[in-house]
Amino acid sequence: MRIFDNRKPNQMPKVHNFSAGPCILPQEVLKQASEAVINFNELDLSLIEISHRSKDFVEVMENARSLVKELLGVPNNYQVLFLQGGASLGFLMAAYNFLPQGKKAAYINTGTWASKAIKEAQLIGEVEVVASSEDKNFNYIPTGFGIPNDASFLHFTSNNTIFGTQFKKFPISRIPLLCDMSSDIFSRKINPRDFDLIYAGAQKNMGPAGTTLFIVKDSALGKTGNKIPTMLDFQTHIKKDSMFNTPPVFAIYVSMLTLQWLKKNGGVDWIEKVNQKKADTLYNEIDRNGMFRGVTEKVDRSNMNATFVLNDDSKADEFNKMWADAGISGIKGHRSVGGYRASMYNALPQESVEALVDVMKEFEKKFG
Ligand SMILES: *Cc1c(COP(=O)(O)O)cnc(C)c1O
Image 1 (cartoon, protein in one colour):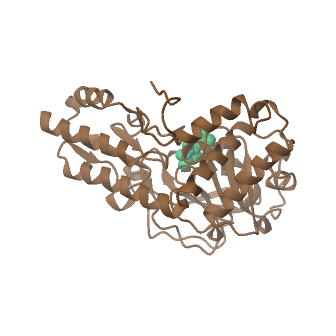
Image 2: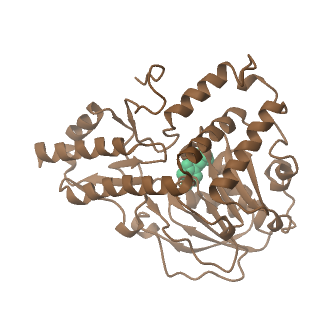
């Protein structure tokens, strides 16, 4: 049970929430969000029952967009949009807006989400998969591949949520880069100038499910000659400041609160260090503890999603009971990898990682 009413805003939750997404959000954000659902800005109205064109909500939208710009250092020639449809619709929108029919796009296939992006792009034009780690069940990030100069762009997934790998350095490319950053945006410093398009579903580091963030370079749009359906055309939404149709007001509001929380605590510089420490703590234990082994190549390990398995699967029931008893939630691995996946998104405190490490040590003592 998560009872937060009688807790201080920064007090630790009683459940250690390692969910892969939707995922943990800061306790104080949940509290503010719940209050706004009842009475927003002292209006005696709920956030979700006022017009999205009201002054109070327009302010939320503007705040959310400027926080994105400030926290990531987005230059002025980029637009920030909060749309619907998830990163999964983003796969199609990316291709519609950047891949002229009859032209070719380059994609890196590093897992489930990258494969889905490829499938959507193939509806628009030709896709050349320039690198893939499918041969080893996506347990590494490919290197040393060529990028064709005649492709319209290179698309990749910065963090592979399911398999637990992460690009530590982004590809250096002469053609525009498009990136699905759903599961590591705001977790580390990036340079938005390196990209023509960055997109991310909110529900992993930013807020609740229901909105998708797009950061798009204005001047790169409108060049494909494609007939783009209105709702899938970034220019539609840019012209209307993300309010072409009713925006997902609650998801945007909570995203704004989470970004305020991030800024107040020291921004991306701060969280990058926090996230590094959490990842080091867990991976050190995975490597030290003879009961476990990591799933991915060490150099490519994700700081957001750590995948690991038991060396002896016959002890799974015992281990599962131990972490459940310790108040740990959400570490069962994805069915395509098995074992365990501990997702350590921005709002997960170091203490939760330490609670998991303690259970792993205890397990080794009992059964090792
Ligand atoms: C979760 C996830 C998606 C899918 O996001 P939706 O918002 O559910 O469509 C896409 N890409 C990555 C990397 C993800 O982690």
